[in-house]
Image (tube, rainbow, N blue to C red; front, side, top):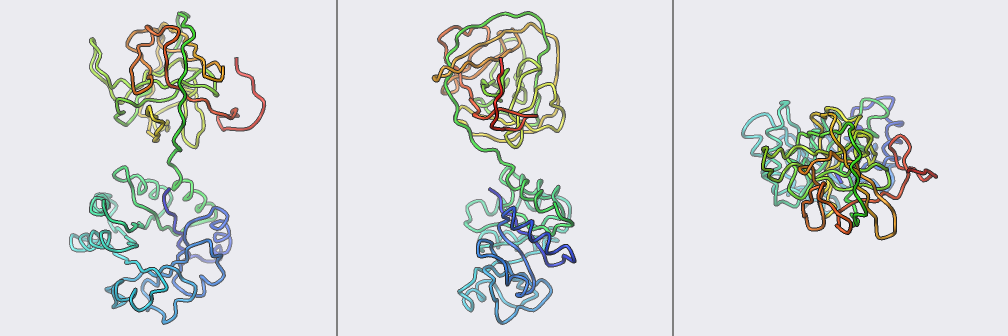
Length: 368
């Protein structure tokens, strides 16, 4: 979970409405430059006082975190913490050159909170700070100009900044920021499914999903004919005798099939396109969102695979009818689809909810 700090210091007439939105969506902190602006906030929210360009007040009021700029305020975080043990203290660093980048790295290694403002659009300096703070216990909060930049900041070096501080331009931006902060998909409880039968069903269209990511050997995407049962299809990470490996690709299944995308929503393979998000899953159920770079839909012979869960639920997957198309079994065993036989075990996932336009919903829905 990433941290969202809402900067209200420069908000005008919309401040109250934006504050209410922030409380509704449970942002982690509100940032103000005056003690009075923090006065009526509930105790469930972190109250950050950051008087950038203003002198520090003698009394911090209800503030629980105070951010200082040593160059402007004339005091270090350590000195302020000794004087005011009742609050947590952090440091602000504006990164404009190599010396200030080193200041940011030092802050990331030593301070409880580091608020960072990068003046140049490149994210290379942020990558350097994240690397410098790899074993530190403090938190990095990076200033974002908008939600789009926040999404990028959350993903830098795969780890991303611990949090983002953003001043919303309008009502709705806070909700979007919170969604960006929660973009990580939850891990899944995979189920062992027993193969019941396979059937050669003739020609149809199948989709290869080419992503912008190298899959690991024990990782793929979940695909199924029905929204309440899917099988883990492995990427083309493992060597084949007649072609090079393509670790970015999953030969996923017939175009009608479901796969898991962003926000636990299902998508048809046929509607994926460049820029779409799909959920990569490994054999332990660990997940991550990956970006689709291309989807190749071609006419190929198809094979229908039926499997059964321990609770008796049936799961169907239709794949290209070819030996090189494979699925994953327990412990990452790679199984060629055309060699599957009754009794073989594959890994799958059984979502508990039905779907309406891809979103999970508790309603009656019969899929056959």
